[in-house]
Amino acid sequence: QVQLVESGGGLVQPGGSLRLSCAASGSIIRINYMDWYRQAPGKERERVAFIRSGTPNYADSVKGRFTISRDNAKKMVFLQMNNLTPEDTAVYYCNADVDDAWGDGVDYWGKGTLVTVSS
Image 1 (cartoon, rainbow, N blue to C red):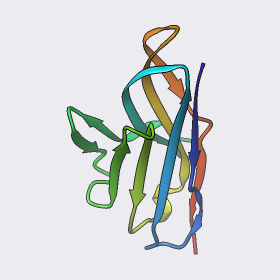
Image 2: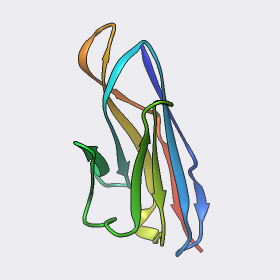
Image 3: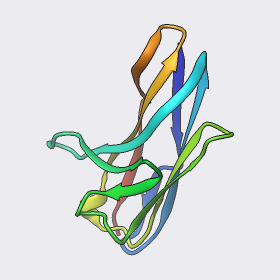
Image 4: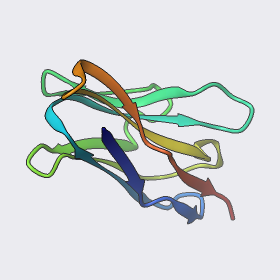
């Protein structure tokens, strides 16, 4: 099995910053993708940041404020979030597409980390 553990969430004032981390562990042969999603109360889960072919991509709502990065050696992905607004309040999830002992392209999710933006 593969485990994804997010960290770094918390309460922050509008205009503040947070850095989320996600660490993957377990029987990993190769990590193909590690993406960030979020789900706000009463809303569907949305993908906010991902890297494909080395190029970062962002949802329009976070473009210019969020930065995704990966440390492949440590099997980690990060999300630097700046200039946060109350609309960024959500549970943030790490999602990974992994080749492991159970097959190729297996999809895993972390349990999420809560980000609350409020004064």
